[in-house]
Length: 306
Image (cartoon, rainbow, N blue to C red; front, side, top):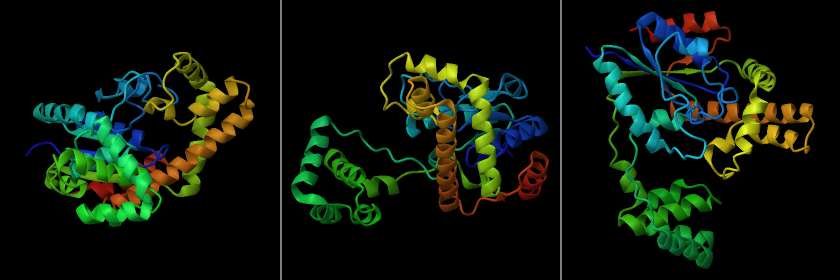
């Protein structure tokens, strides 16, 4: 039997790293990053990337491999992760994928549609149609070629409505058809998924404490160095939790206390969104609801037993 693939997800600061490290030590596994910001080498501290001591405890993959000036999509991550997973298994070890970017996990367990990138003129044509028709008429028109997308996309979500139309113009097939034709790269029997989801009050307290520690441990210097590069604010690395608030503090727009409080609040909000995503998208994955690392590990062992 081939080694099992472990998928350990959950919100930020929930305790995923400790569980993955202990599991890797116990079974000789190798850890693969499934967090979109920990990919980037620029923000080791602010992204809560594993420390040198943690990295020494087990082989790690896809941590700090991208430059802040790059854009890694879900597809780019999956293209990098799949051969690593295959190589780990070929060597008789278990891949342990850990992170809070739920779409990374979904791309492995449900597949990822091969959707073409629409040319600029096609995107402009779709945007112009939305402007001319307005949302209601545009949605009705979209429903003629992609009724599933027209029904699924929330009211006011112009970006996704236009995207569905431009995909049809570029591919000659509806977005829903392309998504339905996807094949999951991981077979159902090859992997086990677990969500680390401690009580919300405890999770928020951990988020607050970790942000405070990051401010003292060098996150400020990381942000200074990154901001000095003058990167496009739309790049993924520029959306790291705490970056905007630290930059505002350094620019004299916020006090240190105000920056920390704002970063903590945004992190709590993000953790809530992550928890909601995992609750909605992985309802059948076992939950680890304990708070402390020992209790979480015992619960993991109980949930992951054959």
